Length: 384
Image 1: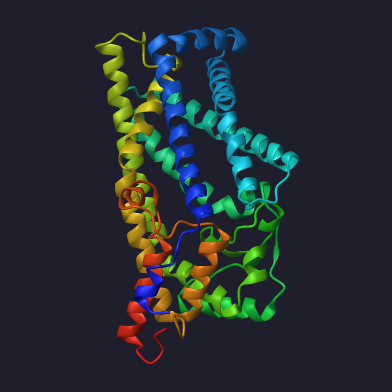
Image 2: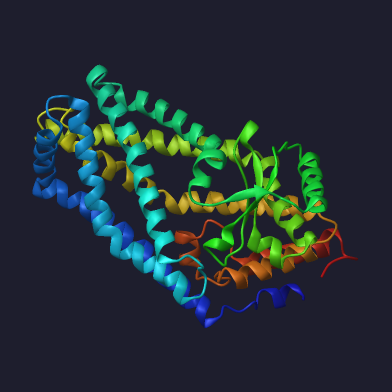
């Protein structure tokens, strides 16, 4: 296949319909989430929820705050359940899911409980800091948030992922040794290679390197192991290792730190304005203002999303180049991308505006064309 032919990699009608529907679901979910927060603030219902939470929690501030977060979480889940269920049905409609209803409901409950725990802990910390340091709470909260972010990033493969998926040590010793050597050449020490039982829930294929330090491990979906050659799997992992080589994990943490710092600062400014100018709340420790903090910080993240997506696409291109330099030929990389494009119903030819707003990875067609152009320039005898 030549480079021009790669650019003609067609999107099937199913792929176009699937990705178009997913985008509308994302927009709908975002609109619903922001609308819920705005309605709470504009109507004053957040104050009514605070009164109800205070009755449920009694005198202790921490209990009243917990019940307020619980009420918000329950209402949010109820409002978003329709979209969540439609997303579940969408995966079945396009023959991308193996998950039954019972498994999906269990995952929804586990995800909701986990989110409630994390949100409650963060809210309790924020309002404790507001009481202790009303001028600098946002900076202290940001520091603690980043500590939590790094902690969860590290423990995710050993504590969080297993809540939703099963993992087992990879039994293919030849492939395991091959991938371990690949990691060693990249200067990345992994603590194991695991088979990810993704097929229990999905027909899609994936691979990743998760964790930090002692928890860093390679995870290969069983759907990848079933349908891809060792050369193709090596190419996929070489790309993932490219992120490690280029320090993208640390850089992503720094980017996340800057974005969340801006979010906490903006939330602080909005809270002061709401109290001093608009008199929406009596004081800063009035936790009825929590929707305002969430709304402002989330809005900043959404506004920055095109820039964050552009940065992500840049890092993906860097990781691709590392892969091409590492593997003997780009052919396995190209064939793996073609298979992933078909198996995951990816969109290889999105419009430019869709790519800018929604895509954290370059489209498959561009990645394949770039690989062929690189091979023609650097390995003309092996170019496909």
